[in-house]
Structures are given as structure tokens and as C-alpha cells.
Length: 241
Image (cartoon, rainbow, N blue to C red; front, side):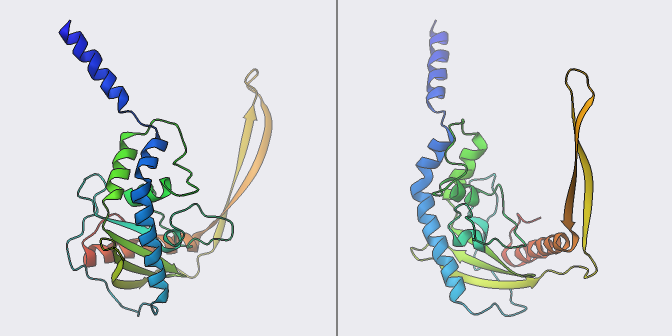
């Protein structure tokens, strides 16, 4: 009897701790908004700086940790244009970098996108997964930001200290992405076929043409590879491989 009662009580308590994604993001919004304000301010500080001189490197003055699966995670990445709009969903006319690394599953972007004013993620009543709750929790603990700014084929990267009330640009580096100039575009042609569930026979066929920019893709991959090497050598960070 006592075992059954304990099991029932345990199940009830467990059920009480289940949260929707909206609840998780709503609870995190005050911290998310405070970090968002600092990050937007950091982008303004970057805009006021002269261009990063060619060959510049960025050396961290302290140990940084990028480890999204651990509570030791204290450093994360954002692209400049997304950071500039506070990780709010891009509206018509707002730019994104051509070489946009996006950082889809990193804790800090997850926190900021989910708590944004026009969030695509923070309105759902679906049960929050453990991975979402962990990402939000670790995003709230981020104290350092590597801000990546793509200017054409040049990638500037800035280490931002988010711990003070006013964020500080610690250092900045830059690199150039390169690709074979002879690369162009190619088109993939394929058919989408609809068949009848009843007869199994084809009832409709639509031909699609997808054009791919091979040079842009090569620049993206080269920029990502070089940036990964730079931040590992200079800042001791992973997360861009």
C-alpha cells in the first residue's frame, strides 16, 4: 500500500513539473531580454569601430567554455545582423549575412529566439523537451559572446564580455573566405509525382528546377572552416566544425 501511494505521489509530482515550451520561454524572458539589450548595444559598439585591420587576431584574456551539453557552457556565437535585431524574427527588408552560420541549436540563440517579441518558438503549447529546457537554462548563463560579422567574403569576429552592466568588446579578428572563381551555378531537375491511393497510378507530375550557387556554397564552407580554426587557436573554442 505504502509503495503504491509513494509511486502515485511521485507520478503526480512529476506531472506537476511538466511545462509547455511557452511556459519555459515565458519564465526565461526577463533574463533573455536583459541579455538581448546588452547584445544589441554590443552591435552598436561594433558599428562605431573602424574596420578590423587585415590580419588581426583575437586572444581571449581568460578561459572560455563552449559546451552546450554542460552547465559549464559560458560562451556562445551569434551572427551580427541577427544580434543587431535582438534575435527577433527577420522582417521584410531586414538583412541577413550571405555567409550566415545561424547556430541553429546553440543555447544562447535558442534562448533569445524563443523569448523574442515575434518568436516562432515561444508560443507553442507543446510539452517542452528536456533538450529545450537545458538549452534555455544554459543560454541564461552565457557570459561571453563571439559575434560574427560577414562583410561580403570577409568574416570579422568580436569577443564580447556580457558580464558587466555595459558590454565590452574585448578583441577582434578577421579573415577572408575564398573559393574558385570559376565556380558558377547548377540546376537540379526533378519531378514530383502524385499517385492514386486507390489505383496506384500516376495522376499528376510537376517538374521542379532548383538552382544552386556553387561559389556561394564554397565560400560558406571555406569561411566556416577558417573561422573554426581561428576561434580554436585564438579563443580555445569549438562549436564551428
